[in-house]
Image (cartoon, rainbow, N blue to C red; front, side, top):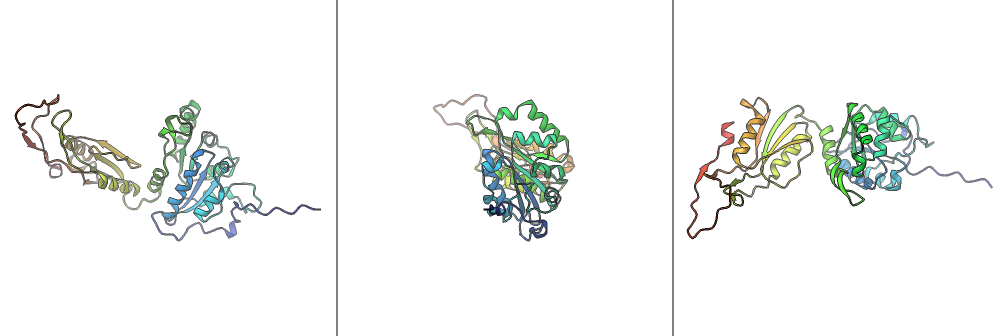
Length: 341
């Protein structure tokens, strides 16, 4: 009795003649953009599904490429359901038409590999083409974003450093992360993969330039703090959220952003140069250094910081002791930064 033919693998993409159009009709900041999302074998692979969802919501057409190792951590059906496109995971699938790695590289505006393991990093640096993802990177002329995820000792190994230097030297490979934090083993250090939101911001910075490319914007944010002594100070309740949001959006639109911030507990937006200050006088100095005389070094200045109007006339180096009488507090005016500029 002859063996029944096996049906096509559900993860295969259809032949080139019946594939979805390379440019989608979705709306969003990434509308019309096609992104190849490579996923390699790491415990962090599930976060690539979160990134895929963010990209689709922003209007991108996402084609996911899984390595064989990645399939041990996450299934093709997950990505197919999120993106609306079948997953590509086998270069030798008989149902594929043409040179699929060439077609994918040519159609993509950006190639993202998240997570990028130490093994994948080594293969990319050596120019190997043993699977669809590696071959796609060799054919790609678009920018490539690699998002490393590995144990801190693997990231700090000389071989990994050489591979990073090789890829960076190619001129079109950019790295997002890794970050410092706890990894799967429970140990901490540099090697933790950047969060999907951070990678999403990096992709927007690469693909959604629409008017601010090449511009230098200086943005201030947060409160200022005027010290009376090492434990007492005068400040305000500014959170800095508006300035940070503006800085993030400006960077996504292609601007070079210098964010001068008072003390706040907010993460630095991707691609933003942050300068931390404490007092109004310190903020004034940072603004002048960033914009230069007559705004020669900046194309725009956005003052969102809540700069204190007054500061103590004297700041004491040691804590003032409580006495029997009251405490007289003399205040002097702070500089009016915006009027000076």
